[in-house]
Image 1 (cartoon, rainbow, N blue to C red):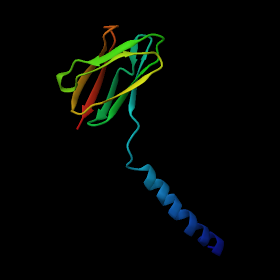
Image 2: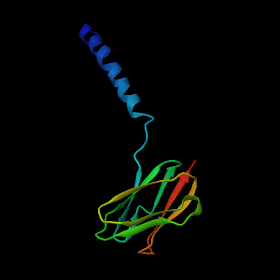
Image 3: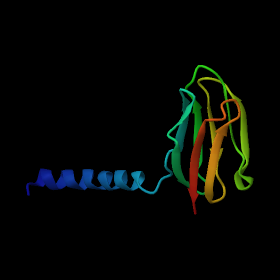
Length: 113
C-alpha cells in the first residue's frame, strides 16, 4: 500500500471506530403514540422499564389520555392539539391506554424488564 494510503488509514480509522462506538449503546428515542382521527396510532408499543412513551395529539381537538392500571396510573389531563406529553413507565406489565373524552380509543403499552 502506498504511503499516502497508510497515512490516511491512521487518520480515518480511529475516527471511524469512534463513530461506531458513539452510535452504539446509547439510549433509544422514546416511542410515540399519536392521537389521530379519534384513534391511537400505533395501537400497541413495547418498551423497557424506565423508558418513555410520548403521547402526541395530532387531532384538531383535545384528548385526555390516561391509564387506569394500578401499577402505572397516569392521567395527562386535557392534551391540546399539537402538543406532546412524555410518560415514563417504571414497572413491567401490559397497560391499557384510554381517552376519557373518547372511550372507544384504546392502546396497549407492553413494558418488559
